[in-house]
Image (cartoon, rainbow, N blue to C red; front, side, top):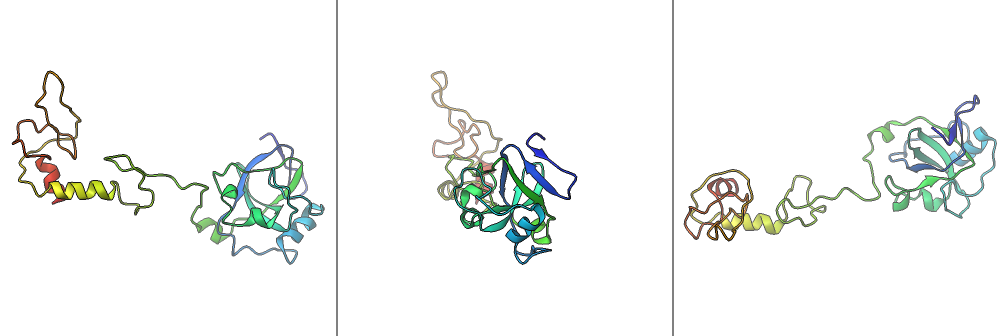
Length: 208
């Protein structure tokens, strides 16, 4: 890929253009091989003294050797500042839009067991929405598909005496059919059921 050249010297990579990168997860079990710290290891392997932080746009001086995942390359050690190395730094998580700046050298390192098995942390966790009303339910358990209000509404409607069956298919009253009524849960046509019925039999049985 353009912007990355692999010289014949070991695993040193020279970046000619900015490349998308983010802090690797699960690096606690990674131990430097040659020096007492990862920043010293980076200096020993690349032959370059630490300078400004390797993340694009960061003005701080590099203080640590950070495990950074570079898209299409893998895990490297890059000299970065403590702020950028902080796991709470949302901008340095995957999906945060951060990049390593041009004209720096980093070196590749292996993935540890902790890195392979670590839970992936994103700058913004994928959002989930209620299937009924569309509100955000990202803070609810992963197996929840509807919000609490919709769930309670279904449970409440299930106490009605309902006799019907059908499949999901939305339908609404029109000038040609002003008496059309749909199940409030799955939208099956229940126009032929008693006026007090609000859900079909299938939904009643599902939530009762």
